[in-house]
Length: 389
Image (tube, rainbow, N blue to C red):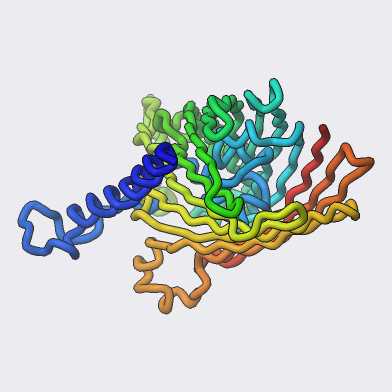
């Protein structure tokens, strides 16, 4: 009981202190402080490789980051590596997410527990981008030159977790990121970086057998991305005046090679604190309620809530789940509020899942998630998972 009390106190301070610090640095809460800079200095969109925030499976995407508290499957590779020790057996998963502007996001992973759950290990690969898009320029607005370009952002990594006691586990993820923003005939402008995630999970029970869980996760701690490559190199500068009218050649004599020096951009670093309480916890059904606080370097602090209902009857091989979450969107105020954006459901996510047990040993699952991303529109996510034990 003493351990739980200390954990609860730490959880309250973890929520309260970031909010207090933010209030001290927010001119709207302290307008008389002459040291503060008026306005919002939050670096909205100021990071690179933001596809790292997409997630892994449709289950986790429907529950958003609050999923870090109850993750007990292969999605722990993304949301909280500490959850790998809670897996029932090995799992493989493939996720497909058609994104905006003819882009796509794919994620695949393989994870399994070791030593009866004392350890967990997994590997994963994610890719976001598009290819073979025509190059449009002011001189060629229709893209008829035949030049093509694409974007190819890839993350690959592995996770390792350990259960120190039956109620506490911790894990770490090492990931490698490649960000190529000009594939094809443009010649490439790529950057590479490495990063780590770290997560812990503590779980216990309140009276009447209602589990409660607390999770702390830090994501994408690593170096900056600095792009370089042929796409940033040039040997000629087109003059500002038309050569046809002047007769002066546009090619300089003895051109000197040069390269645009790209500025470094940090990765989207996030700190998550999550809390879960099982309103219903039975042999055949469960109802989870989750909440989380998120501090990041590319938007203002935010909070979210999520819930998941799971139905797993003992007398049939088929089961199902319903999921929903909502997270406040601090960047919406850049548009003058949600009313100006015309998307009052911005931050809402819902989803469902179906699974089928095969011969009592194998489990195949299909999960779906729907995400409302405000002015960008809607996104559908599909995941296929296969597990065995």
